[in-house]
Image 1 (spheres, rainbow, N blue to C red):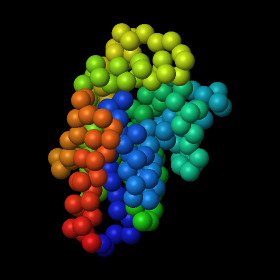
Image 2: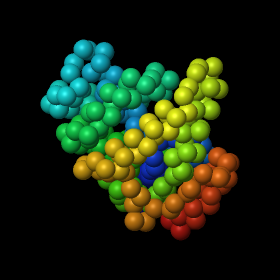
Image 3: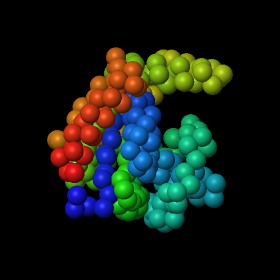
Image 4: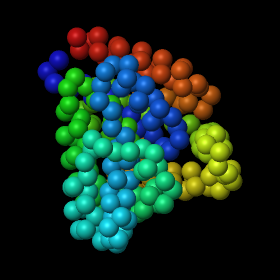
Length: 215
């Protein structure tokens, strides 16, 4: 191969299974993994912790450029209020530019990287040799999130989660800058009626075919 790093770009809406799938793929191939959504959440948390406004693009960009991609704690950053704050700064072009630059630097790590998010195959790594678009129906994704919350011993309202999933889809797909959509050359994986094991096997066959062509 001519490049030092083999990049796998994985996109899709919330709760489609792309995060779990990305971690499994990274583990299978010994690649570095980055959940790019956490980079926006880390920026938002830093703003909240410092008592800074969420509507000042210049301030948010400065914080975004200081985010350390190596120490993103999923458990801390998955809190609802951080997600809400992240959605506000994620629409800012300057913040997106700063974090996309950082994500692209991460993608050059050898021997390979798996990046998952909303715009990896279309914007961050458009030349990635493998692009996957992982999706599922809004109902299935809401049910997964609902079950996940109950599994942690917390209470949840399915209807509220369902509305939140649809609202996020609308926001992600409708934004002017880097909207969520499959890259033209992405392989579609609909996990609505697919176990994570089946999704992993489907992804692995796609990746292995490309790796063998590039060997």
